[in-house]
Image 1 (cartoon, rainbow, N blue to C red):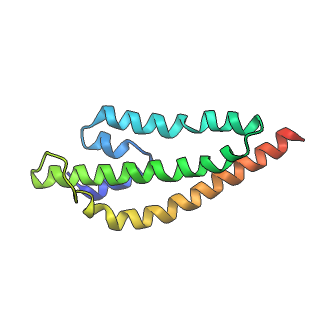
Image 2: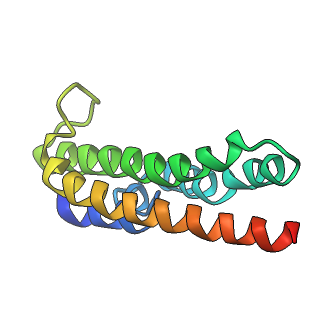
Image 3: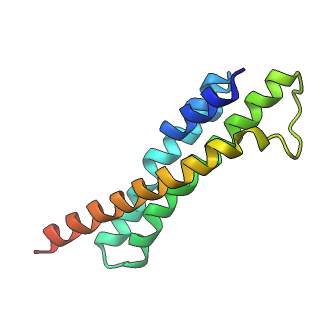
Length: 124
């Protein structure tokens, strides 16, 4: 398996790298969690729980990074013939992870900005 392809796919959409590695169930789980986790947080935020506003970017930031590390590690294990999960399997994804951190940070801040705009519009 190509480690870079699995990592980039997970960075673009959490779970895509797992699906590329043949872990369809895990990929669907990552993808659904990424898409659905902000919904209850938005509900809480719109009902006066301001702390929820700060957790949405966290979800949008951390889930893709965990997905990226998992997919890159599994792709590396597949490529080298190791099937069991062990420590250190994520190392080939570190270079992609550094670039992914920067990209996801920017996307998380954009998401937060859009949510704040929506809240201001709804409360006016």
